Length: 343
Image 1 (cartoon, rainbow, N blue to C red):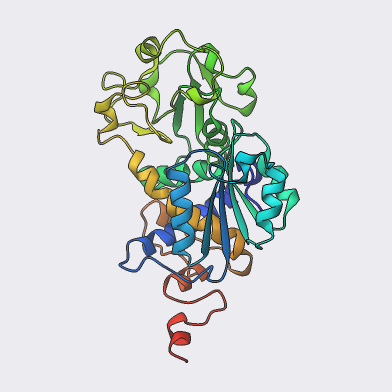
Image 2: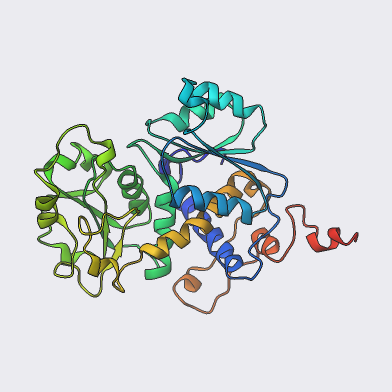
């Protein structure tokens, strides 16, 4: 895998491979020293043209836990404010020879363009209303940890689907993993033709209780140039997920940031059904797995796990290079601690 531009680039086996590798890295995150030398000497550039808390911080943490060198670039305060184009910015930063560029922009298709302008591996961290592939991967990881798998699960994505890059990536990823996806929202916020992605479309929450997973989306007002709903109060009355609509058996998810009191009530946001903080935690290990896959994965065997182990059986995962790295070996198989002591 040279780039991660779209979740459509990954089939089920590729998604499972990344999720499996993230599971290995989760073990590292539980240790006192949360670092492995997997990407030592590599440079990763975080290039963000939009505000971000979760995605940017988790990519930075992921790279540092893999021992990579990290450079953070924000459009604010840079030559972008003087009129420099995306292409010229990329070409300028490429002179520093980054191994990977993590890119977030407000422009759909920008990640694809950037992948043609430089030799670095490109990770799409969100391109306008188009896609957000690593969010879809961490959501699959979170649900596998919570439910054991999503084959046959009913997942309802509720809210502003029209302006959501997360919705598009998740519809594809969830279906590739065997789930049945339904999108729900006011007609003005459901894109025409979205059924072609294979999902069902509804305009009310009447049968919400049939869902196994409820995935709420916020109103993306920063992407709206006109009025799409009469008011936030009326939107909340029809589509807010609250204690009266969410059942005890359901899992509640949200990509963040949450508009508390709009798409989610405070009581469900703080309820045991909510997996939102688990999603944030999953972001680091899944993005570690993505960066490793792009920059070192081709040199290492894919970690595999027997199905019975995933389901809670006794079979143990097969050893992999990722396990070796987690135990302190570098990608060439040499023990890092030995090298430090001159072995």
